[in-house]
Length: 210
Image (cartoon, rainbow, N blue to C red; front, top):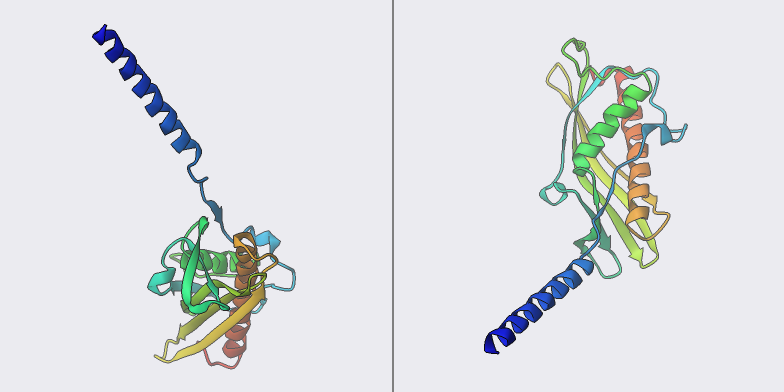
């Protein structure tokens, strides 16, 4: 009789464990939504690559340690703008520095420009060294946020000189969430790339970058 009770109790405990594990599985968090900048074909016609652009190669895009991950960061200015926070259920497909470099390269190629990436690259190609300083969503309040990009661009010359400029650009996010932030950062990226390319063409014509 005792063996029967012991067997029944063991079976009951096993069933309870299975039920509890099933509940735990059902309450687990869904997988994160992953974002990138979308297809280059979606870039507005106003953000075109200049036709007189010299051969370019984006040789390096770096970022501070806190941006060297796939996390989507944001700041709450109305709480504490010195704190960086990140979405737990949304992330980038790759690190922002990698996404930015690939987008820069794709924008030039899509417009028929020369990137100078190959073995047969031209001797007069320009090298771009870019450092991202900020790439995040900035909340002014609970319903108003902007995508912010800050970066430094350096273009070394063959004569040893270096042309440098800092860029800052922000775009209103369509919605105060990760999806809105991703969309706004994509738009901001394309717009700041156009600004960088216009700056390079302007200085190339003046002979400032060779």
